[in-house]
Image (cartoon, rainbow, N blue to C red):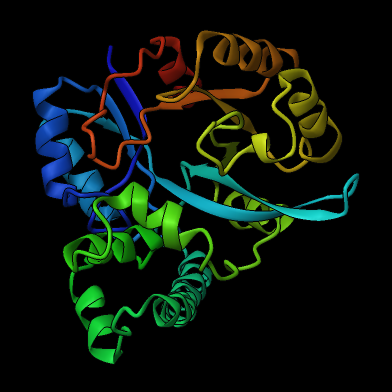
Length: 288
């Protein structure tokens, strides 16, 4: 059985393929159980459910929420990601909250462009205008995010690739994300019949507990102390996990009888969909 419970689309957020193209590719790759987990968006969930049925796949509703986690021991806020699964896609309260978060993303994008212009002025680069913002928005099917600005910077020839866009500009020019607390995220998902899962807790690329500590034992102590009451599971398999990370989080999840999930976190650049080996019994947890 092939499982991938962490995939992004262009339809909903910052993937490179539409939801239709994702399912075409998933079918070619013989994926049996799938979940689309777009950032702060459930707009394509109804379509994804229908496409999965058409392709003969099992489907679990998904979403990825960015949380501002306050770490008391150093009195600072840390950006972490959590995955919501199995919720009611028709719930209006959930839709309203996500709409607020999407509107904040647009305001954040304007602030990032303003910050970019400050840097451009220093370097003698022509400023971005409202027309540039409109062009970026027109290139997006789903939720506005920094990767879309990165693509535009590449297209304008200001940087060579997306990585340079982040390294040179987008980290420095960032603006605050929507301040969703872990308690709020948990309530939001659980109140509509879903479960909340800590996404890629040891992701070396950034939005993870690595921003606090690289020590796996210390990471799980933080989860034990500050998160257990709010989460139902942990993403144990991920495309950027090493074997030690996966083994550590499986052991931790078993200790607390938590849901264990996994996925490629595929944004289709490169096409990682279905490449993470996830045991068949992961699917059984959701059937129960």
